[in-house]
Length: 494
Ligand code: GLN
Image (tube, rainbow, N blue to C red; front, side, top):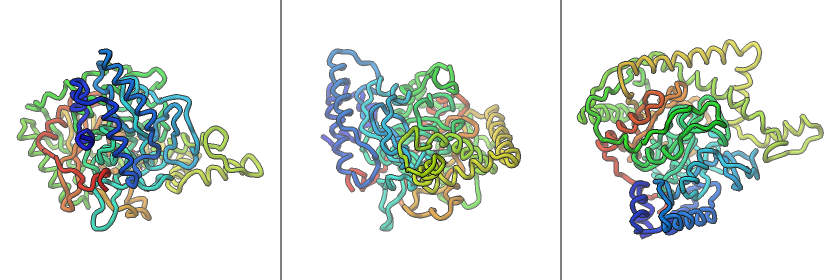
């Protein structure tokens, strides 16, 4: 029974809860047990069993009184430890936030909580969401449940690696992540799950530890496209406390999953055929094209000519914003303080010890590109190129409805690989960062296995605030791909 409960989708669990096949407490217990059994996956920084069982019991009670309508009511979810959670340690996987217990709840996690979702814990991530491997976490790396391979443990991707490993390893039905340059989609691809980054402004950023404010978005990580649609519906919406959140209606995303993509125009950007991309990634992409065509879509070559500048642009804009956002960690207001003789020395000691190497690298790059004399050459130039990248997409969307690309240039790599060369690590984001720079919605759908037997995702990108079309196309892609492989070691069975 327990293992059956951890295999459900949100949609199936919703039905089971409605018909009374099991209670939320039973469902929650099954997941808490699975988390305990998979402690060495290191997917969680904090597990919250008391909160989970209390919320589950409250959900069951609501249901017995006939007072529930939400699809998320009673559903166990994991929360990336970048979302502030009231009364629960929030670390951003950084030493500098030691002991930080927020007195408030992020809007996205509050919306899910209010919809009845049951938080089972806070998941591990790259420090301050900077990375593609989860290796930069102060709390140690996460093991991808698809590993080990050839005797080596694999990364789950990042930065939302703990969330992806939890969902793939059957430790929670779903999880929330954040995506600044690919942090939902790339780990989803590495772990064989669905990850959706909504349009910038779709979800409130209030209460999420900020990395790069003009790029950060929260989104769902689930095992099916339908679940992502259900979950996003509960997360999205205008929030007056976040001036960049958009005052637009939240449609019924689940209703968009009609399965019918006849006549849909799908763009294939030639510039995404990059040098050095593994042949099997290209093969899968071609399969994706054929699947969508077979389902009645029309594919069209499109050009996104500024794609090749996207990574360079991202790695100026994101560190610039990060250096500004991270200025608040000064040893006075949050978490860690390392004493010094003078105030300046205390700042230096705290930041020197509190931030890991990757975070310090980003702060250095960020302050450099923002400094007088370099601002015009780097930051301002990057902003101009960013506008060109966005324009490319807007032009393409004059003729197509969605764009299909690979999610990542490879399958999951071994823990410890690519560590000495940040540039190789940054290449992981080559297919995902343009979407963030342009503010567009993107989803990764598990579509096949690599020669090594590891999951690979395909990405669909849509027009701003047209998540419905993205979900509709993603549903068709999921159906055609028929991906049903599972990590056999499963985090639960390691
Ligand atoms: N891997 C990218 C980076 O290191 C993206 C991170 C993210 O989306 N949070 O910045």
